[in-house]
Image 1: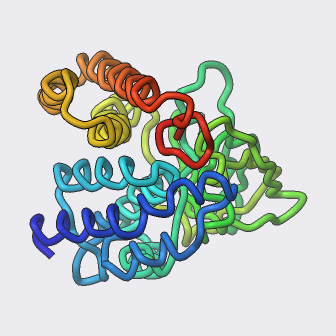
Image 2: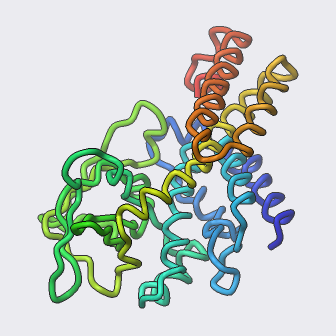
Image 3: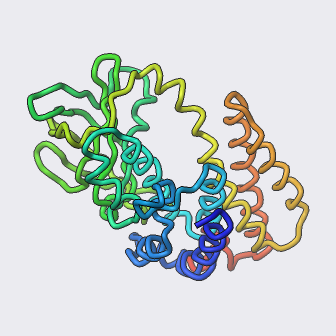
Length: 303
């Protein structure tokens, strides 16, 4: 699919599938697998996967646009689906056997993945450490945030080994005592199924390793990807603005999007903050316009 086809299909899914079910998803506490299946059937689950493996081979700008569409329709579904994209990209780029084994399934959405790497940014001793063994790597520690538990088949985890990061693909199933999951109750998007994962010498087989990367190189590279999260806020802001109707927010929203698109790495935190603040402001204005009805759980204003 080309960019036009991808965006057309994404908009159709957003308006016909995700938005109509968004209130029920948040109220139910679990994403219906049908939401994820419909995205996969449309060929958009592995958006960054190559076309010869069943992916859409989308460029970064297209990915950002689809995230915005999906986030404005059902943020919970979008959040789970977004985690899959980085794992897909890492696996298909790997030169190891993991690419042949998992690349096709991740690209066409028949295998679904989450991620566990935010802990790399935390100060202090590594949250998850890796020790080499004959079969691969044994990892121990805590992944504080893995989204999509119960909806994903595998997850892409990062563990520290001295000055390097060992990246590997792990089955998303409890394997006590080496892998134990604990549900985290969230005040928003709780239906995303976000768990804390505890590892105790859990084996990452050598053929599941996607790469071993210097930690310092990753820290330099990571900020360049922060633009992606801005699209989540843009989606919320855009949907709230549509529900609000023509307003004085239309021009500031366009300005915030432009600033986010044009921001360099040093400006990205400020650009993301601005669009997030604007999303809150527009949503609050929607609640004020609708009145008390907007805080009832079956109204999009409160969501």
